[in-house]
Amino acid sequence: EADIYQTPRYLVIGTGKKITLECSQTMGHDKMYWYQQDPGMELHLIHYSYGVNSTEKGDLSSESTVSRIRTEHFPLTLESARPSHTSQYLCASSESQGNYGYTFGSGTRLTVV
Amino acid sequence: AQSVAQPEDQVNVAEGNPLTVKCTYSVSGNPYLFWYVQYPNRGLQFLLKYITGDNLVKGSYGFEAEFNKSQTSFHLKKPSALVSDSALYFCAVRDRANQAGTALIFGKGTTLSVSS
Image (cartoon, rainbow over all chains, first blue to last red; front, side):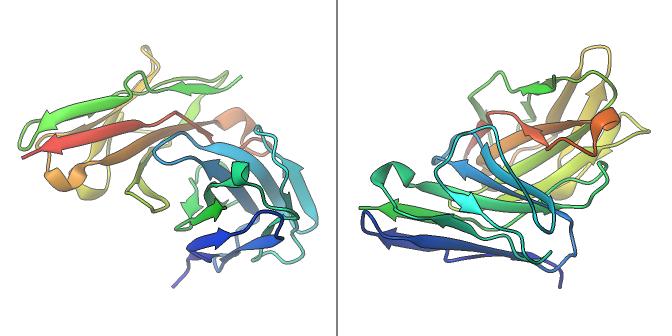
């Protein structure tokens, strides 16, 4: 079944650690996105990609980085985690043409202690 | 510039009563409009979309939305609310004329609380 997967679902990590949040989709979508969301709050676009080797920063400034080496894979990395990075991170993908919405992963809830 | 507004942070309704969650939008051209629902500690789930055609769009779980071009609105409705409908609802828009280069724009979300 075509879907989008995020791992881990929950992560508690100490300050200063390097972490990578994984996102993979099996739908062959060209476009992928990362959103940051505080609990029950609005979504903030932090990164997006329109294809392999294409990445752009979103509306909200973020210390994280992303890569898009393969169509199906769009990992997000924090080189040195801080408590201010505590949040939920949502990955999404979409087709290239605009009459389709996004398919979202289940999210990764990150806590930095 | 594209934008979408959800004027109510929270909507409270009793089970069995009709519900409405409001959304207004602003795009330079014609819009693609979407509603998503988010349950606690989960990602967003697609409910329905308006692309073209009939202004009344039917979606998942008995929800529907009415596209009103003159009022630039896309309100989400359900004739009879269930306690299980309690969740966070997001409206989103994309400008049809600029679909290739822009991401979907989300509203701030409206928390729906259905009491038994």
